[in-house]
Image 1 (cartoon, one colour):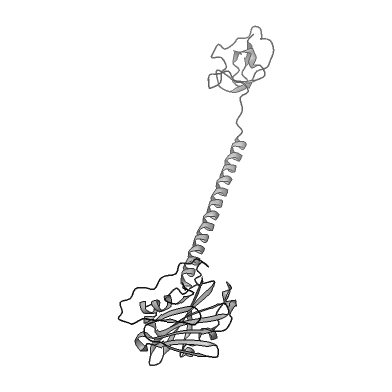
Image 2: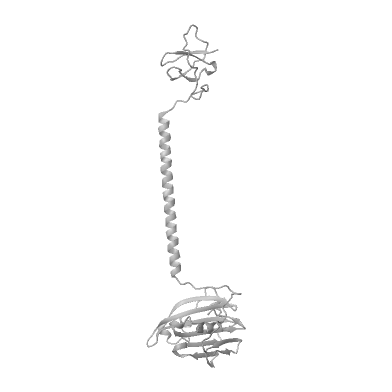
Length: 289
């Protein structure tokens, strides 16, 4: 049975489906929302025969929500606050990324500017072989008394005193000075990862050592021990820029020193590299050149 309702705004009377009782509907004339009261139809009422009360989507209205302007403003304010929070979050995150990137760049640049000791793998390290030379020099192999050998670009002089065997070749200003010293002294602490060669030990057997200073240190493992390579450089009056490349290692209670000293410009020459790489102990290459 249809319900006869009267709009409280325009006083128009209209009929509505009884299943809309106690629910909100729109007035078919003025469009305002009113609540239908349940009950029997009003007799003799003049009903407005217009469009039945329907929702905007052409379906019967159920409970039609009424917009609350305060709620809308609160939702908009919350949305703005969330947007500001997200903007602040991304700004802080971007700042952290920039700071970390700058820090990494500075660390890489600093690491590249520092000469760190070079440590090669322990056993099984592949060391270079002596380079083929066409230098017109006569290379002579000197074999030590304790299963070691080395090649000199000439005929060296050997001497022995107080448990120290020394083999030296003075090649003059052009070639420089070549030396091998083997002494009965145990320095097994050099084989530790943190083992270091003292400045006094580095300057041993170096001519005019007081005018030179250590400019580079590095090490590698070979032959069962740690081989230390040191470079000393400086200015010597009447001789110019000079350098000394010194290898030191201690194995089986014996300490070895293999040294070259001469003009700084010749420190990386094939002759110097050949001298170092030709040094062998028990048939194995020990030095890296």
